[in-house]
Length: 297
Image (cartoon, one colour):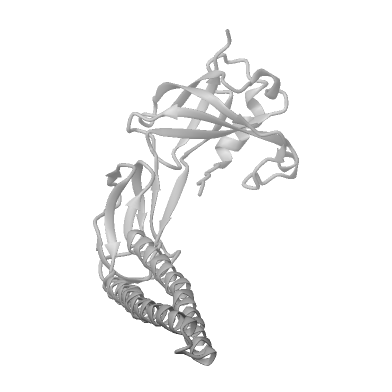
């Protein structure tokens, strides 16, 4: 979010800046602003801890709180138990296959004996056919049991994915500050219930500010990106503090003079927005008025 303040005095000065004969007069007026980031909740539940205060400086990657994760932990344990129970079925299937393979070995032995007896006329063809039928049945039973392994693997894999999703949800329950800066506004407190996407606080990097000013079309050819400018801001009622800034952005399109100008003649004048990046020594605040003086080389 960007805050913009434009006073009547500031806007009037824009229109007269290009025609003044005083070399020390500013070339443009505006106000300071900073890029603000709203940090929102990535989890649903009660805020167990949120250790931040407005004006506090936070580092990037710093954990500032967390949302209740008891339900997620219980769900993770439940799915993990289901996965283990499903995986244990593979041992039962392996035992069943072992039994069938032993039966097959026994029948193969019996088949060899009957085959030898047939040579001596002591066994019939039907006996051999019955043995072959038993062997075929056992092979089909073994094959049927083996196909169940794939189903178990699929169920175990699905449970593992659920565990991974829950683990990620637990990780998202930790409120991690991703932007180094100063807490501007705090929206939530401990023990409040939050939901996914609900704002928790707003943070901005105040080490570098931007002064948004408006220049006339006549001034525009004399401004370029990367240009060094003198930046001034109020020190007291009569004096200004000075620093330097770098032009970081120039609007490609003109816009009307802000509507705070009352007369029709002044409202129809077109101006261009310009941003000047300024290193903040701690004196600059969001919304503070400022002015620039172009440095000619």
